[in-house]
Image 1 (tube, rainbow, N blue to C red):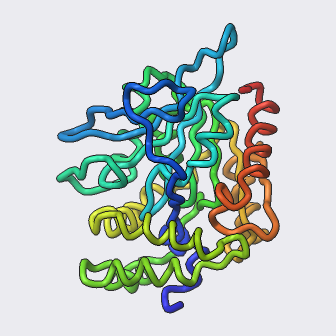
Image 2 (tube, rainbow, N blue to C red; image 1 turned 180 degrees about the vertical axis):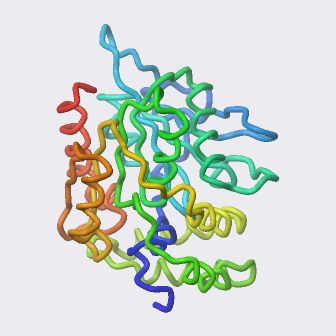
Length: 303
């Protein structure tokens, strides 16, 4: 591929193509949580944020935690389809379509990490959730990192799923990628990157679903989502004191030096690697991923 190895960075900002279409149609507003996630709309700025909610935090006489799931670049909430089904007995799950992505409205203002974090807060407000575990896949990781900066009191824990806590590209590299993100070229660029995604678990059917998901996103989402991650201000190495879990698929960006940086940023961070997994490990290795999440939440007294 001409744009570096896609899974290494944006290559992690560009690597955030996440999107496995659900096996069934989204359930309607009037259906119950037991029938599947309910589609809801939260007012935000001049439009609305769409999110999918598996139901109340109450389960019998027990209070369940809430996991807020944030997708990555050129994607939407459908990347979490396996978790919306498998983890819902243990926790309430809210999967957000970020502004200009999926079924959310396209705002007039520029897409930024602040905007994405505030949209996440708006979905939580609409769902009546004060505090949650924030889970970000790929380029959703800097989104939840920014949410933590803006709303530390609302952050019970952070789970970064094959996403960066340090930006891997220089300003020159970002500018070199810009032409591939133009309105004329972005669809070809996205399709090419999906075609060349590594991963033994990505069979032809899954690649097709990922490609359909990615190509459904607007040019604004693709270009400005990429540029939102290129803002140096969001990559300051301020400490993370909330519980932090990294779940990664081995690749060159996750080298010993990077993992040492993470441990300096968050000394208590837990790091789990799924050998042989692709970037889309939440779908390809859903059972293993879910088990890691449950184990982490139990160890933190959050489940």
